[in-house]
Image (cartoon, rainbow, N blue to C red; front, side):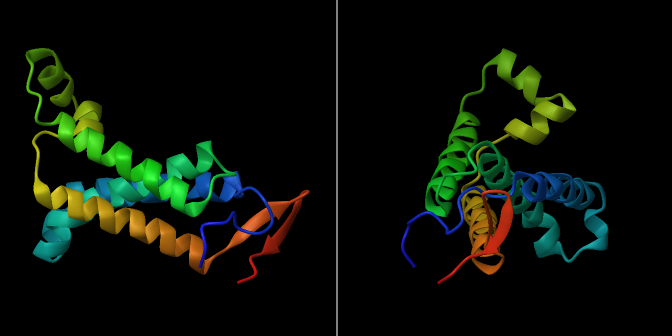
Length: 145
């Protein structure tokens, strides 16, 4: 499949915006109740869902971008946040120790997080490929291969 724009124009922002709280809820649930999940899922699902959330936010903010461009922007953002965890100044550590700051910025660099980010963004890409609905002049139209 090429990186051309999906047929029909922009993504339906409302659909993507409705997915945001669902992904946030799943991510917070994974962090809050890790004992209810298999250890592998408990260890990696939060970071994977965080990257999916970033993908969805970029898709909402840039609805006319190609899937590839959204995925690239999300990956660059995720990697930048992960690399920022190598910087340990008192002021940024104070932000990281707040609940919201820790959820957004994380605490320490882990190579495994980069793999999780790739998986989360891939889930977003696969979602777009599997449910290719775009708006064309006010009407929902399915994507043609």
